[in-house]
Length: 265
Image 1 (spheres, rainbow, N blue to C red):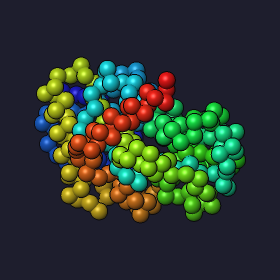
Image 2 (tube, rainbow, N blue to C red; image 1 turned 120 degrees about the horizontal axis):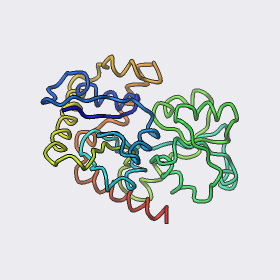
Image 3 (cartoon, rainbow, N blue to C red; image 1 turned 30 degrees about the horizontal axis):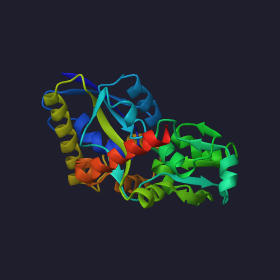
Image 4 (cartoon, one colour; image 1 turned 30 degrees about the vertical axis):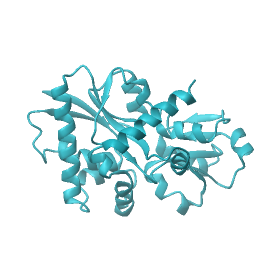
């Protein structure tokens, strides 16, 4: 059976799915047709029910619960892993309210966390995540919310951290930060969904068993070619929650859904 599978080219996703999509584990007769896209595109496609299985931001998850089922494995959730608000200099609350802020997609967890921390900021511009750092540097925007590899590169480029939005989430809600999860269309039977979930778990476990060796698949697709940055990225975003959400992870997702609907009343 063939299934479409979408995830981002970021090191945490390619690390998680490498074994699954490159025949390093037994896929039990399933064939995965892979599409690599940025997370905002994947979020939009989830709203359109385009892919059978997909990585999505938890920021869009509340909008797709009627069509997709959240899997236990393959996601990014944890502590100290949240997006950062950066600029060229320190900005006051009023300055941020009036500033042009770059956000990595409307239906992203980064946008949700930013909206939770800054309720009065309306001048937002949405762009692909790897363009934001340069947009801030070049003065195209006043500040930006960065994710993924850019968390590790902004300081060396002379940019200033205004707030760690993940830290704010953790302080306010006392739960880990749900960044992205893997969902599968509910039209498939529970047995197949459970099989896919189990295979993704095996893929993550295979990746961990061979770490810190980086698969060529990760290097091939990484935005930042520096291996140290790739490993920082994996160390930050891939953890026990990626193997299994567990009770704590599921509670954090439920809290995020609650915050989403409170924020979008």
